Amino acid sequence: MITELTQQTTLPKHLLDFQSWSRKHIEDLFETAKLMQEVLSRPVKKVPALTGFTVATVFFENSTRTRLSFELAARRMSADVLSFSAATSSLAKGESYKDTLLTLDAMGIDAYVIRTDAAGVPYQAVRWLGKPIINAGDGWRAHPTQALLDAFSLLERLGSLEGRKIAIVGDILHSRVARSNAELLPMLGAEVWLCGPATLLPGGLPNVQMTTHLHEALRDADAVMALRLQRERMDKGLLPSLPEYVAGYQITQERLGWAKPGAPLLHPGPMNRDVELEGTLADAAQSLIERQVANGQAVRMAVLYHLLVGRKSA
Image (cartoon, rainbow, N blue to C red; front, side, top):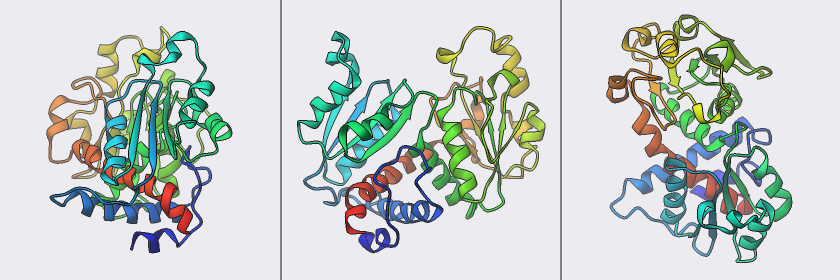
């Protein structure tokens, strides 16, 4: 059944961003993710779909959710997993990204999941390796699987994103999640609003609305996503103070009331309660935060399957 789904379109070889992906590609991938959800609901959460394949998770930047989600996803489909940690590698001795990846490739890797704080490394890896590359986050540039699981979670709750207003609030400037969602959600018919202080709004993002006014962003929104302040990436002077940011942009129960009744609340994590959102909202009925984490595994299983198996059978 999975093979039949992936045969409907010619699939891209990599997932770096969504430039080479069509709406049809995304919809096919989500159909596969639904099948993977069924696998994960069984007592034995494993299928032999990737038996014989080796997936390398190469994280040059720290991660909890994304790394564990990808490694579980690969193992649920019976792939071998090689887990690379920059902190204990030869990078500390001055080895380059390229030579590190070429060393791993000599070990017979079939696909790479790469995260780095430097934008562009997954794109370079395509040239260096010639194997399927999945961008697990590069600098401020992109985080496509996070956007996929966000969209998948929204579709579960809303049924369709066609004509839906999705508000994303917080540190947009430093957020690869915001950029990937700004690329993906309009492909699925959504109207995306990005909101934050003027110093934390980037220029040049097409197909989205931008505003510094929280009420304008949240008014009649069908869903709201809060983003954390990435203070580790900030230059001084971008924010007057944390209390002023909280006063102006924290998602509270009252402010969430500006959105449509029952509008789901999302957060890609890691979450700072009582900063970007009122702490109790994370546990409220409207919150999809834990559902996003759960869906991440099924979506990443689908991505690995499509790039390693589905593309070959298409």
